[in-house]
Image (cartoon, rainbow, N blue to C red):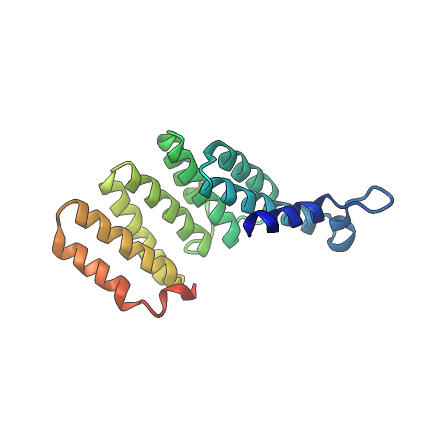
Length: 192
C-alpha cells in the first residue's frame, strides 16, 4: 500500500503544466510544494528503512531534511529518528549519536514534540549499541520533556525504554515500575 501511495505522490510531484511549471508549484506555491516534496522523501525513506534498504533510507532522510524547512514539525523529528536508526544499522552509531545530540542541543524552544523526538532517536541508538547509561539519561530527559510538553506517546516510550534498560541491568523492580507505567497508560499513550 505504501508503494502505491508513493507512486501516486511521485506522479503528482512530477506532474507539470503546459508551460513546464510543476503542478504543485501552481496549486500550492513553491514553498509548500517543497515541503510536500520533503514529506514524500520521508515516506520513501520509511519505505526503504522498513524494507531493509539502509543506505537508501539514509539518503532519503537527508533529502527530506534538506527539503523540510520547518524544523519544529512532527515529520522533521521523525526524519531524525529514522535517520539515526538507519545510520546505526549501517554501522554509523557514533555518527548517529553525535548528530542527534547536536540537533537536540540546537533545538529551540524546548520542550517540544521535536526536541522530545530527537531524544527518542538518541535513546534508540544508545539502547541498540548497549550504552544503557546513556540511554537511561536520554530517556529520563525525554520523560521530563514529554510530561512538560504533554506528549503521552513519548511518555510511554520513555517508560518502555527505561524499563528495558533496567531489565538489561537486572534491576527488575525498577524495570517493573516502568513497564507498569506503560500499561497503566494503555488508553492514553496514543493521543500524542
